[in-house]
Image (cartoon, rainbow, N blue to C red; front, side, top):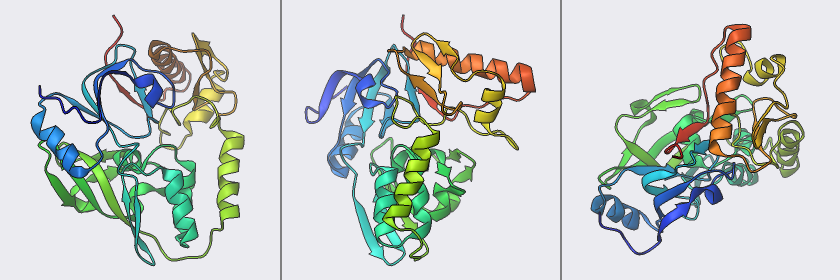
Amino acid sequence: MTILKKNCVQNELLASHTSWKIGGKADIFFSPNSRDELSEFLKSNDCSITWLGNGTNILVRDGGVRGAVISTKKSFNSIQLLDRSNCKVEAGVSCFELAMHATKNNFGPAAFFSGIPGSIGGALTMNAGCFGHETWEFVKSVEVIDRNGDIHHLDPKEFSISYRSVSFPFPLWFLSCEMIFPYKGLTTMEELKSLRDSRIEHQPLTENTCGSVFKNPDGNHAGDLIERSGLKGFRIGGCAVSEKHANFIVNDKEATAKDIETLINHIQNTVKDRFGINLDTEVRIIGEHDE
C-alpha cells in the first residue's frame, strides 16, 4: 500500500476524534486538504476506507480500525451562499454552523440543524433530523467521491431515503451538497439560542455522548421505552444511561467500547422483553473487538 506522507498519521488513537471519547487505533489516519489530495489518496491506496466527520453517532471498537480512516473535520468546511434561498455546504461543516449561517441569511427552516450533533456529511449519510425536519428535505444535489477517487454530482432521486436511513446507488462518500431553504425571516439568533438551550436542558449535550443511540420505532419514542423499562441511570462499567434523556449513553468513567456495546445490547433485550419492540441503533458501530 502506498502511503501519502502529507497529512497521514499511523496508529492514530480514534478516541480523540469521537464525541464518546472512545475507540482504538486506526492503521492510517488521513486528513486531506483538497479534493485532489483526497482523490490521489483513494487512487493510490487499495486498503479499506472508513469515513469520519465530527465523530458523533459512531462507536469505534477498542481494537481499532484496519485500513485508513479519512477525516473531513479540518477540511471541506465551507458554506457558499448561492442566492437568497440556495447554498452549497461542504461535508465537514458542523450542523450547528449551518444553522447559524442559515439564520443570519433568513433561511428559517434550517434552524433545526442546531439540534443535530456532528457534520453535514454525517447528516446526509443517515438523514439526520429533529424539530420535525430531516436533512434530505432540503437537498437539491450532492457531490460525492467513489472508491476510485472519481467525483460525481448526483440527484436525490438516485438515493433511497427514509427515516434515519439513506441507501446509496454505489459505494461513495459525501463531499458537499446544494441545499434550498425558503427565504423566511422567521428565526432570530435569540430563537436559535433558545432552541439550543432547550436541547441542553433536556439532553446531556455537554457530556461525552454520541447523540441519540436508538432510532424511534413507529409510534413510539426510544427514550420513553427505555425510561419505562426502568433503565435511566443503569450502568455497565464506565458508561450509563443518561438521567436527562434515556436515549443517550454517557461515558462518564472512562468507559470502553465493550462497555457501551454491552449496555446497548442490554437495553435492546430489556425493551424487547418488556414491550415486544425491537430498538434499532442509530449509532454506527465500526472496528475490531479488542483481543
